[in-house]
Length: 249
Image (cartoon, rainbow, N blue to C red):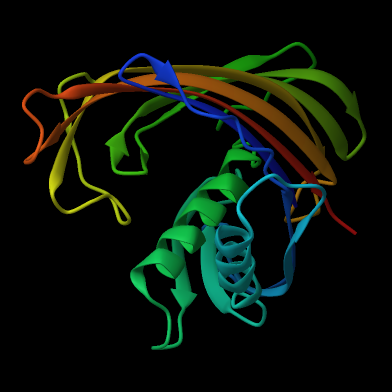
């Protein structure tokens, strides 16, 4: 799985320098170990590779810390249960005690990325041209979202299917943001967040993981930051572009 991020930040109306961030490259193995009578699939996974690749303008110290956090994921395993339509029912990491809150947050973000590249199928039988929508309510970076993914079956050959997907994200305004890594002497309140994305997934119906999946998601958010040492709150605005690519063997 390859994840590329590009983020712009503006604080108090002043744009911060835009850093070039290297791509995150992850590899993991999956092994199915149980299938329930109702079709639920239990499988184990283990990360075999985690690193940063490509040019970067991020400060060396910050880049080193991020690379160390990622490389600590190598060898980490867990268990997942999905139903026979590809919808995740349960996920659990087996984390060593050495993992701090930042590392746990990184794992949660990675697991959500994998779920974003999955494509839950509808319960009724469908054919070429079918469309369906899946709505979820994830919490990402301390922000409660409503995410709607609309799928369309654009190609079908025997046990292989290609889906087109469009994503829309919205978040309720005026919600307080509580997330790992935020300064303790400040409070953050979301003012607005919206996002959209598109991509494509190539499935083989006797395989657990898509053969290939790609997704581009862009979002814009604004939050109010109140600091105990400041006379008045400031506005912080971000625009983010995330590219996800998954290839399986």
